[in-house]
Amino acid sequence: MNSIFSQAPGYGYRLALAALLSVALMAADIRFPQLSVVRQYLTYATTPVIWSVNLPGLIIDSVSGLLTPRVNLQRENDSLNAQLLVLQRKTQQLNVLEAENRRLRELVNASARVDEELLAVELIGLDSDAFSHQIIINKGEVDGVKVGLPLLDATGLMGQIIHVDSVTSRAILVVDANHAVPVQVNRNGVRAIAVGNGSLVEMELMFVPDTADIQVGDMLVTSGLGGKFPQGYPVAVVSAIEHDPGEHFAKVVVTPLAELNRSRHLLLVINATNALGGQNE
Amino acid sequence: MSKRAFRLKDYVPVALSLFVACALTIVPLPMKLVEFRPEWVCMVVFYWAAFHPERFGITAAWLSGLLLDILDGSLLGMQALSVSAIGYVALRLHSRLAMYPFSYQSVIVFLVVGIHLTAGHWIQGLFGVVSGGYGYLIPALSSGLVWTFVALMLIALQRGFRW
Image 1: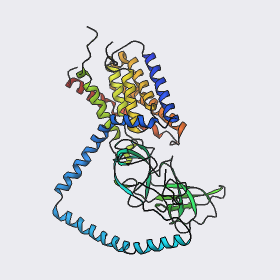
Image 2: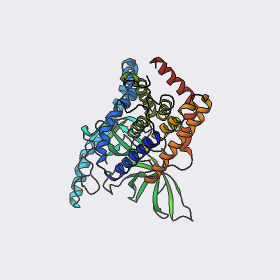
Image 3: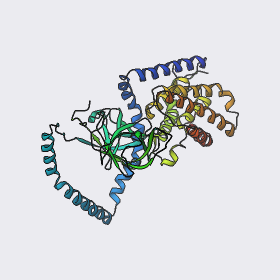
C-alpha cells in the first residue's frame, strides 16, 4: 500500500476511525480556544478558493472602472462633491462641540472619550449557510484584526469579528440568531438588548416591560454596556411594538440600520472604547 | 496488475473537481437562491468514492469534509464526520451504483445529503440556536435534482484526463 487513497479492505474500521477523529476534533474545538491557531493555519488551504471566487468581482470592478464613460465619472464626481460639501458643513461645528463635550465631561468628572481608530475593510464572502448570517472580510491577523472587534458600515452597526485568520476574518452579523447587542433608545436612554432572529431584515428587543417608553420610529444606538461595542453607534429603528396581555414583556421588532445585504465597504473599530471609557480586551 | 504506482497526475481531476465544488459552495448568490444551494462537495465526494474507490477512500472523504468545515467556519470535524459517512455509503454501494440509472442515483444522493444536513443541524443545535422547521433539508432536494448534471460533468472531466 503506497498511498493513503489506495483501496484497502475494512471500510468500516476506517469510518470508525474517521468518526472518532471527528468527534475528538469537535470536542477539542469547543474545549480549547487555542485550536483557533490551528484553524488559522488550515485556512491557508482554502484561501485560494476564496480568492478565486472573489477574482471575477475584482476583474469586473477594475474593468468597469476602466470602461466607464467620462460623463458617468464626472456625474459621480459631482455627486460625491455635493455629498462632501454637506458633510463638511456638518463637521464645521464638530470641533466646537467636541471641546464643549470635553469640558462638560470634565465638569461631571467623566473620563474623556478616546477617538476611535477605524480600519477600512472589504467584504469578500458571505456565509454559504442560509440560516446563519456571517461574512468574511479581507483583513486578518496581519492587519491587527482581533476577535470581538465591532464592524460598522456607513449607516450602522454590522456585527463583530468571531474568527481571525491570517489574511481574512469572519464576522457575525447583528441579525444572526446567535448574536445579541446591548442598545439604548437614543431619545430617552431606555436600555434593552437587541437579539437577531435569523431574518436578515429584523431583530427583536428582549425583555422589554410593557410600560417602557419605546415608540415606533425610535432609533436604537449601542449602549456600550457589556464592553463589547463602543457607545453611540446606531443599530436599528423600532418598526413595530406589540403588547400582548398574556405575555410578560412587550414584543418589539426593530429594523437594522446597517445595509446588511448590500454594504461591501465596511469599517472595523480597532481601539473600541466602551461606555466607561475603558479599553476593550 | 491490480496495484498501480502512485502518480500525482491521477489525482488532478479529483483535486480540480473538489476545488470547483468548494468555489461553488462559497460563491455569493442572491438571497433568494442561497437556501437552494446544492451540497457540491458532498456530491463530488460521492461520485469519486462510488465510481473510483481505488483513488478516493474514507480518508480523502474525511479531508474533503474538513475542508468544508474550514470553508464554512463550522465546528472543526462536524462536516468531516458526515462527509466521511457519505464516502462510506458510496464505497459500499460502489458495485451497485454503476448499474443504477441517474434517476435512482439521484434518490440516493438526496438521502445521503439529507443525512449529512441533518447530522450538521443536530450538532449545531447542540451548541447554538438553529432555524426551526425542515427548511435546512432544501439543499438535499436541490442536490438530488442537479446530480445527473454533476455526474455527467465529472464523467466528462475524467474522460478529458483519459482515466
